[in-house]
Amino acid sequence: MSNIELYQHGLRGRVPAGTLIGVKRISLSPSEGDPWAKSTGQRGYVRETYEGTSQLLPELPIFGWLRFHSTLPGALRPDRHADTFEIHYMVRGHLRWQVEGEEYEFSTGRVFIVRPNELHGGDEGSIQPCEHYWLRIRFPAEGALPSLTTRETQDMRNAYEHMVNRTFTGSPEVKDFLERLLEEHHQGPSEQAVLMARSMLHALLITILRDHNRQQQAAEQPPLVSWHVRRTLEWLEGKIFESEVRLDAVASNVGLSPAGLRARFKAETGYTLHEYLIHRRVQEAHRRLSGTDEDITNIAHRLGFSSSQYFATVFRRETGMTPGEYRQSHLKS
Image 1 (cartoon, rainbow, N blue to C red):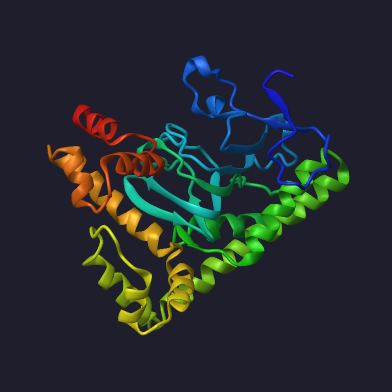
Image 2: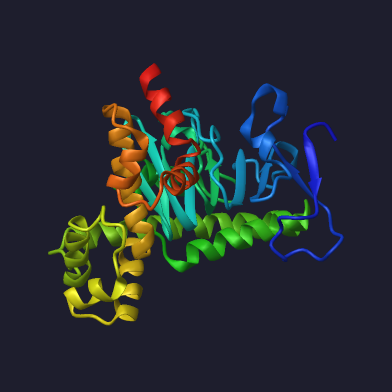
């Protein structure tokens, strides 16, 4: 089987019990330090990756889905891919990415585009807890994608090359088409599976373009900003480092019920209030650990964590490193 492994778990209930699905993984052994290989079969790390002989469509060098409940350090080290666009969709969770030196937040319900040859990787090279899909597609410089004309292919390539926004909200259909594409890979190689997978891919590519263009047009109009969420973010900035921030106090400040604020804040930012507070505290911890020699216990208490142990647990969950390891890595650089 070379580097094709067969798994029975991780297929999210879509495949009948006892069905074995071919899933390709990176072929480095754990002894060579490959984090993907180390995560294989480990609790909290579930993924499916299709490439090479397990891939249905030759125009997709790789297609995958993962659901991680723990940070996987070293899994998103900076790299670049010649001649392929990389498309990601976040089902749930948050990733902090860098592309050509620029930092981005990639959160629930959003699409993320990496163009050919762009250097990209995760924050500290890690994947934080999340569920997301990704694929790479190769648009030929000349000629056509299978089942499309040359003009249709080149028009689509040109549209992706000229996207203004790298990350934007995807419509529900984006997730639907990705799920269908994954299901066809579960079916295994057949003419019907290839035809269906290709139709899902084309629908996905067009839907992503439409979502991008719709939001770009909306951005050119006078902004419609939610006053409640903007005011909440402003109010929270003054409370970020308090040990306890009560939802009812925040809601009262902006004139909403706790349930109303909870729903609106999540819908507009992709974070719960608790997740946002943790996110901002960890951001500040990055700055203090890399830019000062302040004692780690003191940092924990100043940032509103109840103990240095809890701070270390949260920091490691978010970054894949302990605070001490993070500081040492920046001292070396």
